[in-house]
Each structure stands twice: as C-alpha cells, then as structure tokens.
Length: 330
Image (cartoon, rainbow, N blue to C red; front, side, top):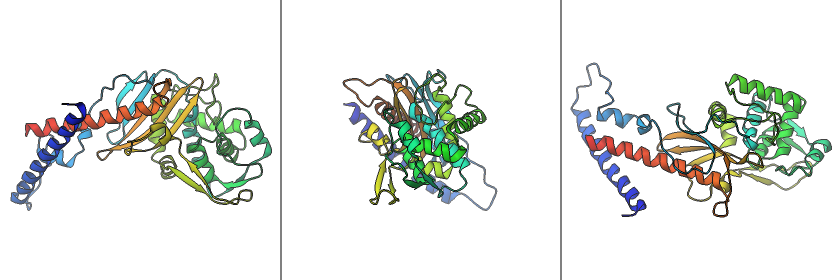
C-alpha cells in the first residue's frame, strides 16, 4: 500500500470513528438529566475530545529533511512551539523585515487613508539596487493603505521606504521605532538597520523572534487583512489612470496544492537566501511557520515553499493520528 493510500485510509477510518462517537454522544446527551448541575467532561471523556481541537493533544511534530537552516512552527490556538530547528541562531531576515515595517506603520499612522507622494529622491535611491519594488512613479500619490499592500504583497521597497517616511519623518527615526517595538516584543536577538530587509551587519534576527512578531501582529485586524490578501487593486492615481493589481509573492513560492495556507511574506537576499513566513489553517486551528536560509537547487527553485508544505502536511497527518489513536481507545 502506498503512502497516499495509507493517508486516505486513515482519513476514512477517523471519519467513521468520529461519526460513531458523535452518535453515541447524542444518545448520551439526550439520556442525561440537564436540570441538575453539569460536571465538565474530563480529558478522557469522549465529550471532551468532541468539544476540543485535537491540536491540544499535539505537543510536537517531527519534520525530517527541511532545506531551511532555521525554522519555527507555532500553534496559535494553544500558544506553543511545536517544532524548531536552530530557531535561536541569528540569521538575516531579508524581506521578512517588512512584517515589522507594516506593523510599525499601522501603529504610527493615525489615518491610513492619508496620502503619500513619491519623491524623485525616494525613487532614485532604489534604482540599481536590485530590490523589489511595487512600481510606483515619481510624483505619484497613493494612500497609506495602498503602501501597506505594496510593501507586503509584491515586497515593494519603494512602499516600505514610503511608510518609513510617512510614519516617522525619516528612515533613521523609523528604524528606531522598529527596534523599540522589537524590544517591547522581547525579540532579544533581533536588530533592524533598514525598513526593507537588505543585508547589513546591523540587521539580524531569529525564527523564534520573528514568530513573536507575527504572533503579535496577527492580532491587529489591518495587519491580518493585508498579510492574508492574495491581491490588491490599486485605484487610479494622479499619474496612472488604469487600475493595477498588486499580487502576493507567497503563492508563487508555495506552488499548487496549498489551499490551507492563508497568507504570508517572502524574503530573498544573498545573505538570507530563501525565507518564508506563512499562516495556515488546519482542522480549525491556525499555525505559523517561519523558515530562513533555504538554498535553491536545480531540483527545487522554491525550497522555502517546499518546506512550508512539508511542515503543514506533517501537522495535518499528526492531528489525524492523534484523533485516530484517541478514538481507537474508546
């Protein structure tokens, strides 16, 4: 029997067992006198498992052969790390930096409908750097909300620099706000030197620290909406009269068969290699997976995306196995 057939068989068996327990639970429920005080079911009771996510019983997952040198996988519902690999080792964050850029901008710009006009100086300083840009032009005016999408989805350095200017008046002052926020979030092995994530001696982090950042940021409704968007339509501007679409780079890195991944942020530099932060939903629970320093090969040009899918597939199978083991004992 192939691994795929075994996987399908496990799912069918779990479904049968869960239906059986659900049916018995229904009869038990209707036979109980609900007029008296009700005792909460214990962990060993079928009613407990029926009303709690299997993720509560999942303490960890083992993931073999990740290409990424550093990784942290975090269970958001139960607030715990369930997998790590060199998670406290310092690494370059590349454009995962822009998660902090967006968060700090959201918290410091009073009205995200305010406008920003791209100066010639801002556009010119990015020419020839090789940094990804959203493609806005000199003297073009857009909303700060558009700048957020331009920073997160196509990883635009032009929009990241614009957010820094709008939020703090200068890039230097904005970076100070980034590091202040990192300190507040207890990202003790993190330091930023720019809002775009380009390699420099003063820019470093860990996957554990980035997990702290993303866990906090996802509680912000605006950040979550931007982070989980696949695309964003840019309204006509004073320069461009046609509507444009900004697309997330995440789903290109992930490839096909990744419907459980809700959103994320990519990053690639010479010092950081391939980095990826994603949010996924599996069986009613959310998980964060952050990986850095994944080397591309001739066989796999999207190693960070491959690692993310491998992690989430493992979690899904472990959740099924936990449920199967539990119900098999009933």
